Amino acid sequence: MRKIGVCVGFINESFRRRIEAAARGFSVDFLGSEEELAARIGEFEVVFGHPDPALLVRAVHLRWLCSDFAGVEKYLPDGVWPAPDCLLSNASGAYGPAISEHIVMVLLMLMRRMPEYQAALARREWPYFAPVRSIMGSRIVLLGTGDIGSNAARRLKALGARVTGVCRSGRSNESAFDRVEPVGALEALLPGADVLVLALPATAETEGILSRERLALLPERAYVVNVGRGSAIDQGALVEALRARRLAGAALDVMVPEPLPADHPLWDCPNVILTPHVSGNMSLALTCELDVEMFCRDLERYAAGKPPAHLVDRRRGY
Image (cartoon, rainbow, N blue to C red; front, top):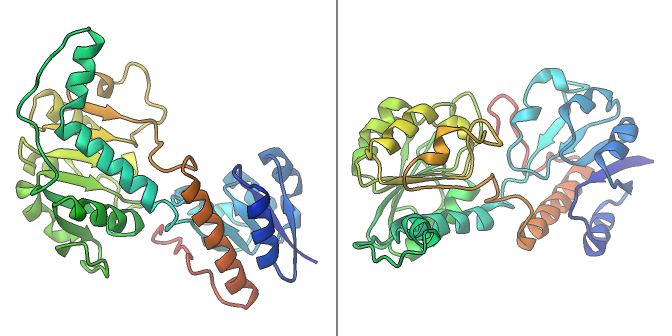
């Protein structure tokens, strides 16, 4: 019997039934821990979860790893796989609602000067800060137009922003973008940006994409929001710009390293909102629903001899 190993922390009875219904011709084992998966990984043709990459070389029957995470950079090296033709898919499509709401939340907090209010109220002061800013009318550049970028564009557009998408191809089917430009146009867009949002995977192309030189092109009124990967930003240059007030502020859910050391200079930068890589995760029930739904649809495709719809090109990283 062909076997599927499911090792994700959010499985409930409803999800079990849905996965079992989609797994015609397979037996499904729901594993309670990474240790249990490690002991049995050689049994499974399909794994749904995010195992330690070091385990995969022992997965002698593995043909498809379906990651329940969107970011799969740890699985990109060829050396982690038991065979070169193993398939890798991700959960890009499950995280857009949660992370786009996080983007709206932190952007409103920055614009409404919540970090300043929180600091003052912690000192038991009763301030009034003016002026504040609005998403309405803001010019927002979204670097990354995939699931997260598209979801964010819809919400920001609904709040009255003018949203420009930037991606490798310079094309998107998402109608919420006022326009979409290739990455080569980024330098021309940055001087007019009120907000720059980064929603990028970790790839060789995205590493350091917001360089010191590009950061310097942003105007002093600009906010930087990063929900992709910390490696996309020259973090030292960002710290310098924030401390010198050459930027209005930043909201970072991802950074290098993680966890951020207690003595890292980002902790003390002015007008910064730091969150510990929690904009996505599985904290929103809808994310879990979408994750399982995507796996079940792709499982039906896989059983029919078709590649998963969310197949990752390991050379590109997405």
